[in-house]
Amino acid sequence: MKLLFYSGGCEVANERMDEELYAMIEQKRSPRMTYIPSCSWGVEQYYKEVKNIYIKRGFVSVDCFPIDTKFTQKELDTALRADVVYLSGGNTYYFLKQLREGSLLPKLKQYVARDGILMGLSAGSIIMTPSIGMAGIPRFDCDQNDVKLKNLKSLGLVPFEFSPHYNGRKKVDEELLRYSKKIEHPLYACPDGDGIIINGDKVSFIGEVYPFVKGKKYSSI
Image (cartoon, rainbow, N blue to C red; front, side, top):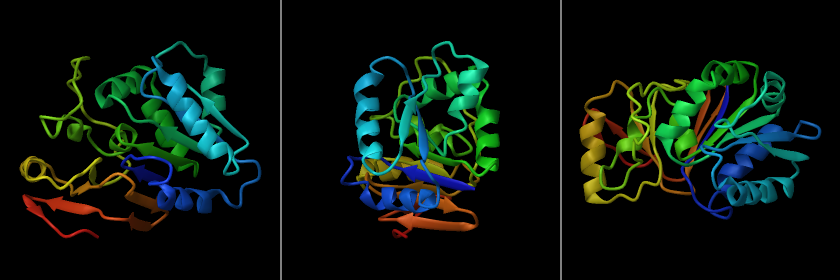
């Protein structure tokens, strides 16, 4: 299993995370990436930025595959033959709803099982965990569940939940501590530019990653 959990941030901030990605593909000839945006509306600028970043670092193609527009089985199969699939940031509730309606959740699990590299940023990272409950926390700065999504179960590729854009503020900690009491899994909070790498049986923490477990916050690992 090869997974990369990006919190967020610009190209420079994510250099350490990207180096891990490049190490995973260094043996691949002509690596390809599929970028799956959380929403097709307004995606052009974000896609252009992602494409520019990764083309100059050796990817021969970075294709955009919106899932809230009609697509054929052939187009889906082509998208999931890429060496890397990138789940973007955005509204996590809307993203999960579209992935579920397009029957992509089992397809992405199969992709990972075939040794495909799955990376997510912010919402995309949350979606790789068992639940997108973190999308609603902290309540004063969270995604809006405008699609009225009730089933928050997601890909469940890892036994932890992920909180992106962590800033260490007291009010944020209070909500993360409260939430951590309600879940079975550890919760990892990451500032932008930091993240988590899963490569086979190896788990690597890049930068500062703060565990919240059963109502307790631990020092960064």
